[in-house]
Image 1 (cartoon, one colour):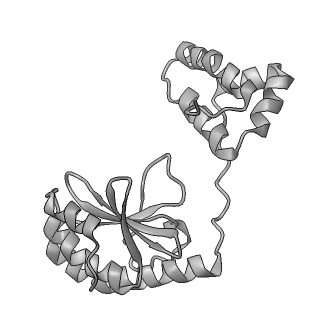
Image 2 (image 1 turned 60 degrees about the vertical axis):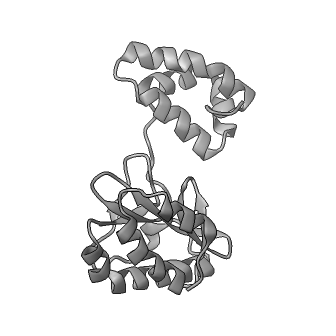
Length: 193
């Protein structure tokens, strides 16, 4: 097994799940994946396409498959990541024994993820999302703004909608719409400079 200095350094730095990561890591490397630190975590790729990443949480260690939505899950171990994630799915581990018990499943899922990536398996379409009422109303009443919004990438449109919809009060959502209108007209995303 080849060791990569940046991941070795990550493991030496500690963390909450070093023994579990040391048990999981050989499975990822045996699958023939490239290893690097991305987003501050051990990440595994195939032909420069991200396949999986190790994530440490307070109560578990996760192996997140970037395109887990296209994987079969006969073992029923893949969980959705969160409400704002679409394609990612992850397996959770709480001990070295847990990783060892699921080693064959991890290996099979990695092989499938690589095969799906090589085959160019597309992600299924994202289910339609309703726009926040305040954003939908503004777009309906301003055709030029609606045209600018439609020209944004799907990710930028979604980010704006999540930003607006994330406010609990309608007055706050309306203020957020007011604040983003200039950026939308300029064709910028919420976080673009």
